[in-house]
Image (tube, rainbow, N blue to C red; front, side, top):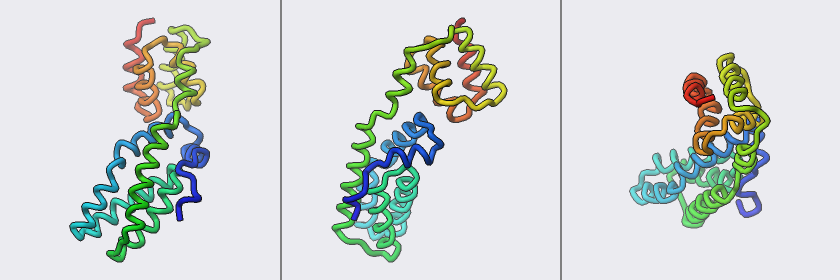
Length: 188
């Protein structure tokens, strides 16, 4: 059973995303917002004898949890998916699935995935103008910017933390033209 597996294998998940902690934090946060209530949705579908859609939801959780290193939930989802595939279920696995969805979301909420980037947002070795110019130039050339450099350059802009995190998100999502527009609006 899943009890011997970790709720979150952070190192595995980080490796899956090429070491990008900010992206992992975003993906885990998205998991919580999209799947916190999935066990209730699955149980309602089972009560309606809609095993196909229940299986689809569990299968989706299985795939995402596998990629994000949510190992206990992945293991349980794999077993639950197999039962639903043949239109079967049992209360033990349904209860385990519900418990693990809750435990996984709690673990993610409690994990401070942003401490490295947020701690660095207040420190900078670049002036605002240097940071802004370098960021615009690198984004304009579609250059890869490693997490530490990006965090330092963003910190050098001296902008509010929320704005900084929004800008990081644009860059990580490869929305460079939007990020450049935001940067151009920041005074030197």
